[in-house]
Image 1 (spheres, rainbow, N blue to C red):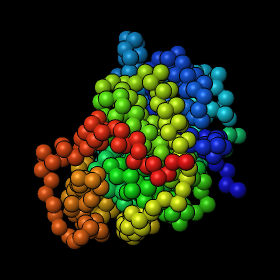
Image 2: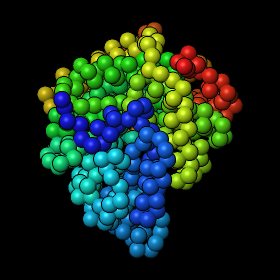
Image 3: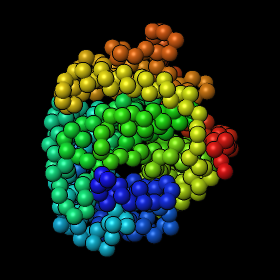
Length: 424
């Protein structure tokens, strides 16, 4: 049996879906209160410490200055506090029953991971592509080099709590308007990169998109590819509640959260990253995060893993396979292969403005919510129905970005019944 480590083992031990918030507070006492509230929420959950944007971008001077001034940050400045103080913060939590994951958003995570391990945290996430291209202008080559060192650091960890767990963010690129085949391929490729550098326990992300049928098919394809490509590594799947423009109404937001929970349950996914009813307007409170965890759990409990319609899954699987194989043909090592694939446009993330992205691919959402390729650039795949290049104007792009917000704010009742075929 493959050893998973305490984070993944705790997820596997939960009787149903593990739900997880993304809280991060700059003051240790507030962070402790938030973790305590999540732990005592009465649902199957794990803890999260989300870092601030200064730490994410390596601007540690400004993080320290903010702490000295008593200025609140938008997350926990782990490196500024150091591993020892963070370990003190976590002392009251039994990480055998309530393990904590560090969420960071950094293209260059080595320094963060060093302090994370010093703090006794052995679960984190990200990836050399997914935490580089969407979030700044760090060259992909630099991100790959630092992530190689960071993964080797995690892979070499030899604590009594088992291997470090690393979740790829590849299935969440830009949150929306990235067709499922590319999301699945990126999640698999980053997981393979982790494993190549010594990480033995991984999870694969997939962000809820705009069409239920496509999402079900994508998770089916992701699971199939993981079985085929990840060898004997331990892995599970984590769904993210919609990461694009969020509904402003409480009813629309909660309906969307419920839909993502039903998607996770119906596809047998092991973990769900939730969003709250206040996502569109401000940083959520502790109480709002706990309410979201409970709402998602209640929604998931109305659904059983089922023989879902995987009609979309086969096409998504074939597209993802084509992309993965095209990358692997570039080099025997995943790092240089990813760099080469982006340089040649064999991987091309729609609407991503990073200098190392070819920026020739485009995708569209149709009136039913289905996500299609409009143009695939140099990628070895083609839009359904041919090689056409559908123009995407600025007005159309904005309209598509608001698809879920518009639909949920005006028609949340319909979404509540969208997956009724999977209800007990």
